[in-house]
Structures are given as structure tokens and as C-alpha cells.
Length: 203
Image 1: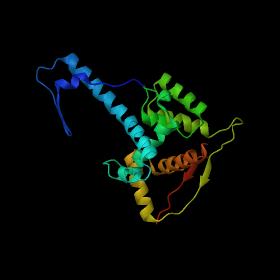
Image 2: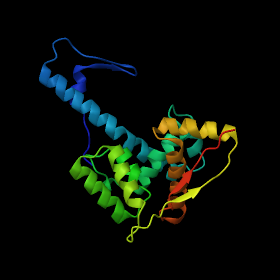
Image 3: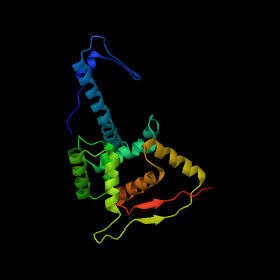
Image 4: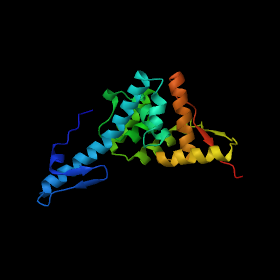
């Protein structure tokens, strides 16, 4: 992944909540500055993931406490760290977002590369990659559906917390639960988990 630099930011005045540009800023510089800001924005989630993986390895006794003191949702940070562990820098696609990588992170490495190749070549947005991966996962080589359905009951306070975490991650509750289960299986066994469908029961 190429190193990102932002030399044109010296022409701007920045704070934590603002970007003030000089009135004499030319159109070409303005456009290039926007591209650099976007590049930093896309790269920063990988940086956070690598930062978390380093902290987990270097400071295991204080790692989770430090995570909880950041301004980002705890589960979102866990997703970043999971993606960073599953995809070493040499395997990350600069033209695809971290969210693209998360969509295939639970798959075996050859399948990860297969789908990322397609997404990069076809310029799929994250949602299209998700749709394609799901469509492929519903059938085996004989065309027999392989998806399983699992019905569980949870406490309402658990569902509220999980729903908030799913909203922060930009996915629905079922997808969030599946991603957490897959992350646990991959972290503990290094293998992809069976896809499950969790139906939320009304009180």
C-alpha cells in the first residue's frame, strides 16, 4: 500500500473540526487537495487497524482499556483490527476500501483474493461485492442451497447494544452478528464459519 503524503495541506489551515482554505487557491490545487483528503480518509481506517493490532501485541494488558477511551465505537475498532489482521499490508488493495476487505475477510485466502480481484476489476461498490459473495455462498457445486437458519432469543438490552454497534458499523443487525461470529471463529481456528441467519423476535 503506497505511503500517503499531504504536501498541499500547508496551503490550508486545519483544526479538529474545520478546513480553512485561502481565497487565492487555484482550481487545480483545490482539486488535488480534495483527492489527498479522500486518500487520507480511506487510509486512516487501515492505520487505525494497524495501530490496534500493534497495541494488542505490545500492550495486551492495557489494550482493551485504551480502545474504550477512543471516540470510536468499540465494535467498529474491533472490525478494523480484524481486517488488519486478516489482510497484511502486502495483500491490501489500494483501490478498494477497508469495508470491501471486511466483506470477504471470513473466507479462505484464495477466495478472498478471488473476490477482491473481481471487485477491483469490475469497480464494484461494497454493497455489490456483498451481494455477489452472498449469492455465491447460497449454493454449492450441485446447486443445493447451503445457507442455514438459526433462531435464538436474546434479552432486550443485549439486542439494543448490538443494534447500536451494527448501526455504527453501517450494517444491519443480522450482518453484524454474523461478522462477530465469523471473526471469533477465524481468530480462534483460522477457518471460515458457516453463515447463519438470526431472526430477531418481537417482545
